[in-house]
Length: 325
Ligand SMILES: C[S@@+](CC[C@H](N)C(=O)[O-])C[C@H]1O[C@@H](n2cnc3c(N)ncnc32)[C@H](O)[C@@H]1O
Image (cartoon, rainbow, N blue to C red; front, side):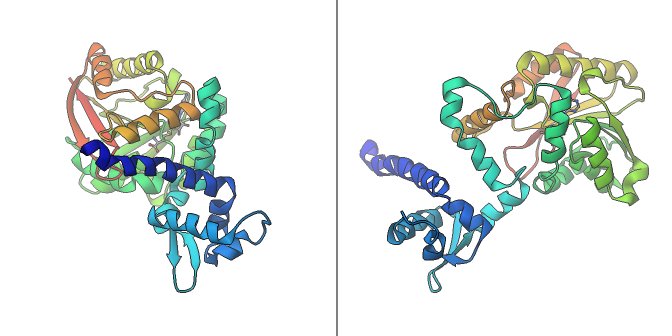
């Protein structure tokens, strides 16, 4: 019977969750991230109240899950390549991302978010620290987008640019066939860093605008507005208002222009989707995973139809939706 067949793996779900929680709560995971290549007894030597054999078994679970690497000969453990990559690209590193999950019970009790995202000023401070590490994660996806976005783009506006990874790929991937100019727009401290990080050889094809995206004044004509991983920061009424405002002012000067939204819309993995909703909610109360249908309805009432979707490879959940007349 299927129910009998699944029962052991269902039980393992709780075991897995608690193994991860225990290794974090006792500081084992943190010790491995900070001091790789030590044995279980080294990791436990500071604590008087742990049992090395039991810790070794717990580490065995983390090993089979792919969280840690292990050399059975020497007895050493280290953070695995996969998790070390996450440590590199997650804003604040792996441990600060886990620290968000740790608040799950508290979040369920009071619905409070953990970052101050309410004003443009506070977002400027948060994103000046957090918007840049993900560049590595999105670089390949950004190149796929740039190469597949037809017609080739000449004047692009990237709203909420952060590291500028998406716009930068447009300049680099299309050069020298198309002379593409990108205007990167973000809050003042963030955009100063976007500009500082841009390779000097590209800067003659970049403009940097410090602006709150609630008050954009499109003073030049754009072929494309690019909005990557931004609208999920806004609750549905605000996201609708912003998107429609940007589309209407874009179309008033460039009727053939297009809008490209990059985000994790309708995830095919239901667990990933449910977890993402909670993660976003814990980070930011107004955060919302808007669906493709929702974006289509909002764009339509501002004058653009959904044209097509572009798969961006890895990470698999990130996709681009293109809207045109
Ligand atoms: C999740 S990050 C995405 C960054 C980048 N587009 C990417 O995909 O990596 C959201 C960006 O939107 C910017 N942002 C948030 N609120 C903003 C506002 N009111 N005006 C301008 N930019 C804002 C943040 O500073 C941040 O760089």
